[in-house]
Image 1 (cartoon, rainbow, N blue to C red):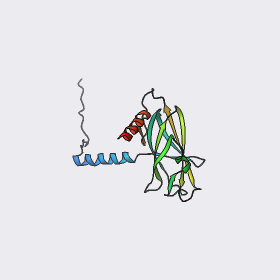
Image 2 (image 1 turned 90 degrees about the horizontal axis):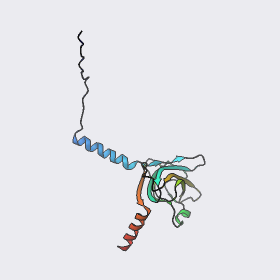
Image 3 (image 1 turned 60 degrees about the horizontal axis):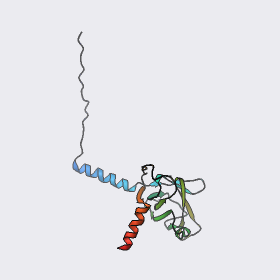
Image 4 (image 1 turned 30 degrees about the vertical axis):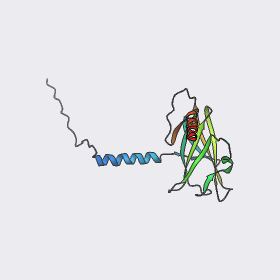
Length: 176
C-alpha cells in the first residue's frame, strides 16, 4: 500500500522587506514615540494624583517624567508650591512643568531614593495667579537595596546615577 504525500503549497503569502527609506521612517517614528513616553498620573478619591514609579534602587537618583490631565483649577500658570522650594534638600523636586498642547501638563522631577521599602513622596502644584488652587501629587515607588540587583525601570523613569557619582561630578564642575 502506497502512501501519498501531500505537497505544501503557499497560499499567496510572501515576505516583504522594507526599503531603506521605509526603514528610516519606521525608526524615526519609534524614536519620537519613545521620547514622549511618560507615566500617567491617576486621580485618587481624595483629589490628589498618584504616580507609580515602579522599582528603584536605593542611593540612586532618578529623573521621573509624568503627565497630569487637564486640571481646570490649575490652568497653564502652574508652579511648585513655595513651601517645597524652601526645603533644604528635598528627596523629590520638580525641575520642569510643561503645558501640553493637547491639554494637561508634563512634569519632570528628580528623586533621590534613600530608604528601602515602599516609599511615598508628595509634591504640591499651585496656580501662580490664584494661590488657593492647588493639587497634590503623590509619587509611590518600591526602593530595593543597592545590593539586590538592578531593577527594570518603567518608561518615563531614567537613572541619573548613584548619589556618590552625582555629588563627585558636581564638585568636579565647581573646580573647573
